Length: 237
Image: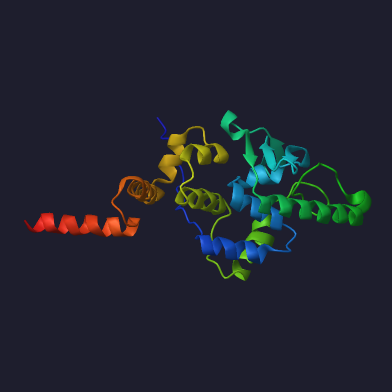
């Protein structure tokens, strides 16, 4: 029997909230500002972003539908349906993403006008300069990595923007089930496994919430200090 190939493990790298703000500030005015803003605020995969079509976006309703992904097969790019039902999903958009998409639509209309007959209308939100699917390697080489350098941020993978989005939301106490659906995970257990390192922080938030509801008079910090002091007294007896 031949052993199946081992899955390659990539250590997760995420941006802090401050670094994420710096990243988006550096992206302002870029041709692909809206793409980077969507990646960081929705956790969408690179292939999903590059396959996204305008017909799948409801700017007035501040939402989009993930219906496809861009796949590179033998050097040829094809837009295909997601492999799992959970990957086909609706994502609510924050105002900052909607505003970026509106600006992007205006910019793209001008780009299409300049291209004239060379423009290939595929309804893509993030095509190359003549309307065809954008090469993921070109995205990294000419846009994403230079953006990180310009923002003076550590070199990370594009996929780490997805991890950053999930980690920031979990850190803010957003329900894990909601985040799991936003990411398109097949099951919430996948989200819990991938982001287990964030769970201790969430558990502390839960403890603080209980202190705020049932604790003695005083703030959460006072209650926490009181608990530590009681523990020290118990240990010395």
